[in-house]
Image 1 (cartoon, one colour):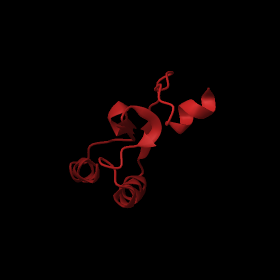
Image 2 (cartoon, helix red, strand yellow; image 1 turned 30 degrees about the vertical axis):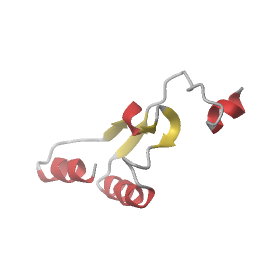
Image 3 (tube, one colour; image 1 turned 90 degrees about the vertical axis):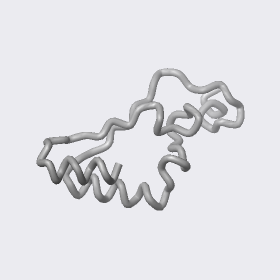
Length: 78
């Protein structure tokens, strides 16, 4: 993400938003970022870099929740 943000800026390509789809999740559990793909410490830097370029993130969630009793969102929702 840092690289994309940098390259779009260097090439003066207008980008307002980075869309975060299913691959951002931890095992398709919405509202939980994959720590492997987005380590919390690095993701703070990514967000700061993206926001400082005047861009935003949109995190996509689909209308289904993964059936897994250890998944907090499923457990609280049921």
